[in-house]
Length: 129
Image (cartoon, rainbow, N blue to C red; front, side, top):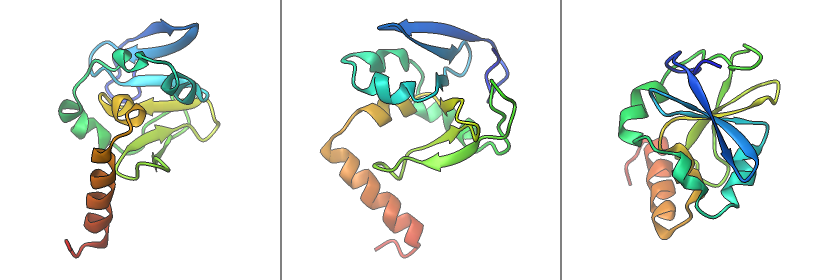
């Protein structure tokens, strides 16, 4: 499998019998189906996300990213509970692609998330208040 963002090879990782694919270069992670939700519940699973979010910001802005399984253009979606967090979703429900650092953000829940979401809201409004 090739990475949908940088076209490099993906390597399979097994966490409690849940297989994900991680890019060998940009460290983005492909989650088949809804395995990202299953892994969120597993203590320590954030260890699979070894990349740095700062390095993936350029890749996060790419448009027209193709699903590595079906080839259809994925949709960039905001997480329901963390609107500052965006990842790609396959329209055929094959899976989700998280850039480096995004799974760690998806998994953690803290007071800081409240402020990130609040900041995102005000930037979206454009008034900076």
